[in-house]
Amino acid sequence: MSSQEHPLGISFEFFPPGTDAGRDKLMQVCDVLASRNPRFFSVTYGAGGSTQARTREVVRNVGRSGITTAPHLSCIGSDKGELRELLAQYREEGINSLVALRGDMPSGMGSIGELRYANELVEFIREETGDHFEIAVAAYPESHPQAPSFNKDVENFARKMKAGANLAITQYFFTADAYFHFVDKARALGVEQPIVPGIMPITNYTKLARFSDACGAEIPRWIRKQLESYGDDSEAIGDFGTEVISRLCQRLLEGGAPGLHFYTLNQSKAPLRVIDNLR
Ligand code: FAD
Image 1 (spheres, rainbow, N blue to C red):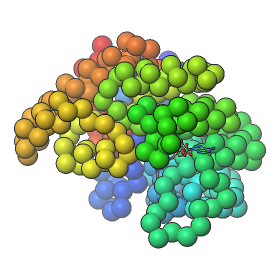
Image 2 (spheres, rainbow, N blue to C red):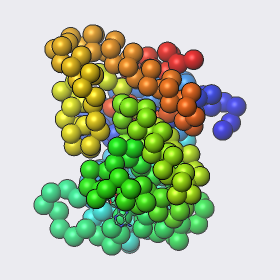
Image 3 (cartoon, protein in one colour):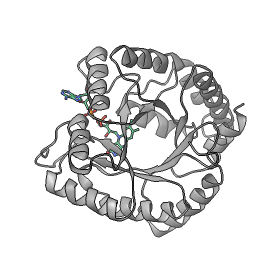
Image 4 (tube, rainbow, N blue to C red):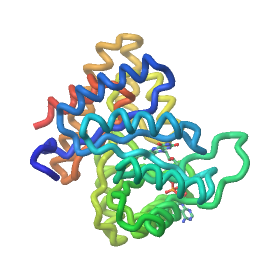
């Protein structure tokens, strides 16, 4: 980490906006967040390559901030030739960090492609490009929704770390012990690389509940009940969310988490309120 980077080792994730207005707004958000000297920005990728052009455009634009910018890349639905070409384009554009994922098969899409799991994608990237890229992969403290068991999921996680990933970023969660338990299990399987907690600020209960159902992140009952009681009062939700997430982040850092990766949803206010609360 350079002396310029934020002492907490924070990073921020964006998604590629679908409109010109969304793109303009993202650049403003990016400028605000860049002033906090994050370790990196990352930009999500639609499964099956559906946002490939937009992801690349956002990576280029966001990268002008001077902050390392890591495109996400998923293998499901793509063949090796397509992935090879994309890796070559990123190298030419000076990209040296990636978030490597399996992704989810969009409904109605045909072939799953040549690489079935993220560990195969990490192996492929290493075979094709050696040590050029720093590779981050996904981790699931509360277990991936399709995993046959918690232990199998941690074994599968260890497999992709051993395939050559440099770090992991977790799915978001609201229970610090889920993270510490997962890290202990991964360490017991020989994983030594940093496992950075993914942090989802709370700003909208309906959207959060929908996301969480889909990705298997548990919203504890006391948080749900409190959020439900606020109805449409976004200010109350924001204040409560900031308090809950700040406390979660503080506990994670005090317990040894190597940094924090914020799912920004292309907004700067909620993550900054949390960061400004941390000691
Ligand atoms: P994998 O690590 O391949 O795991 C998927 C499932 O297969 C798990 O249940 C695992 O236990 C099992 N498994 C893994 N390896 C093996 C093996 N060798 N043999 C048998 N079973 C195995 N999605 C997007 O579409 N775009 C994004 O940009 C994006 N970014 C993300 C960023 C982060 C930090 C996280 C946490 C998730 C992100 N996702 C994204 C979601 C992700 O694509 C889905 O969760 C997807 O279902 C799994 O991807 P993975 O890379 O974790 O898969």
